[in-house]
Amino acid sequence: MKRPMIRLMLAAWVILIFLNTFNQSKQSVVSWIPIPGSMQRGQGNFILLKTTSIVLSSNQEEVARVVDFLSKKLSAATGFAIPVKTANAASNAPVIIKLSIINNATLAKKGIKPLAVTTI
Image 1: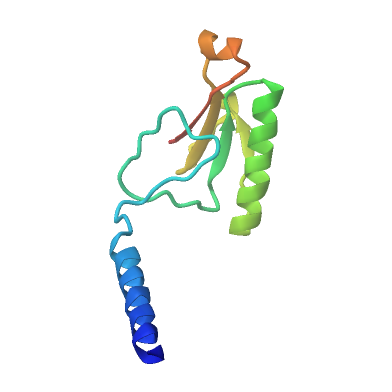
Image 2: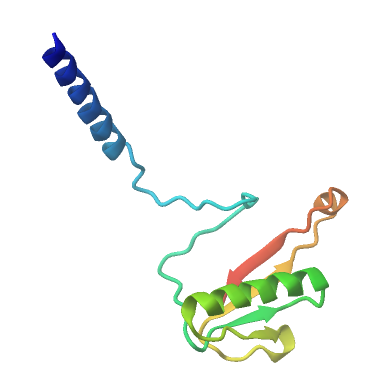
């Protein structure tokens, strides 16, 4: 009596593992909080180089705080400095991350300031 129950439980466990393994989505999912209102994924890879910089295209204090935070996190993760430059002083670096506030009156009424992140 005990042996069939163990076999049944083992079979159920194997089936659950099998279903979970083959149920995994092959498409990569982006998990961000808050979820972006829209996102366009491009082809290829984004590689941070020693020459990568972040361009601050707004003089708003909130954007500057986000850019500074991002610069510190990326610098710690890569091991080299990711400098912050103003839009006027943007260099010809091969990889640039640009952050800017999107002006949207409807969202502004709700206290939301959408941030656009693009790469050049």
